[in-house]
Each structure stands twice: as structure tokens, then as C-alpha cells.
Length: 179
Image: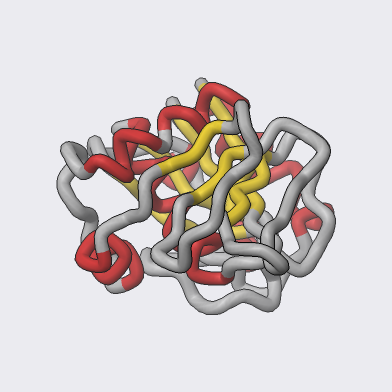
């Protein structure tokens, strides 16, 4: 089992599509949304409901190959720790979508858009940078993902998964390497 927490503090779209892309890149994976105030994620059920009623044995493991998503439902990650741990124990891969407005766990992988000066952002810990269509030069020696195709972003945001051969999806292996 592999678990990666993903955090994009300045790009809401990236904070939504990157966890889905990471899950797709991994094969069979579960995305768990830890953002109680975030937009709804595609998928059935939510974390708040699982915590309130307790998960069934069937909900704790995959019943098919591919990506599953559990939205948040308005619960803080600290309140859902036991359920999250149970899911992480039984799924082969779990992607935790951290709230962009909150400080993430120390192990979370920051995803930072590459922006031109004076908007360029640098993080003082291992991070993955996302190329944008706005330009900008990343600092030397950092991992930079290619910009995703607009069709890829549209597919992910609508609950459809693009092909795994997508160059951006494939490049998300760098996020898993930092996990």
C-alpha cells in the first residue's frame, strides 16, 4: 500500500485535478478529500458519512480496478483519522487531497505552479512544480511537470478519467516518488 498526501496552496484547479491524476497514474487507487470547505469531488459517498456511521467492510477495500473518490462532506481530517487509516491499510494506493487553505501534514507533497516574476513561488521543502501556460522559469534542480492538456483537466473535473497515456498523468509518478 502506498499513500501520498497532495497539497497545492495557491492553485485551486491544480488542488482538484492533481489528486485525481495521481490516483489514475497509480492504477487502482482511492482519493480521499480532506478539505471540509472545498468543492464537491466526483464520486459516491463522503468521508463525514463514513465517520458518522462507520465504514462497512466492503467500503474499506476496492471492489474493482481503477479510481474511486470519497468526497469530504464537511469533516476535519483530525476527526476522520481512524477511518482514513483503515482505508489506507486496505487500498493498494491512497491519495489524500489536502485543503489548500490549511497547513498540510509534514509529509504532504506541495504542488506549486510555475509563474512569472513577481508571482513566482518557492517552497523550502521537496516539492513538485507544475508548468503553466503563463510562463515563468522554475528554480534550477526542481521537478517540473508538463502543463496538462485542457481536455485532461476537463475530463478530470467532470468525473471522467483521461487515458493513462496522457503525458501529464504519466509525469505524476514524480509526486509518488516524494511520498
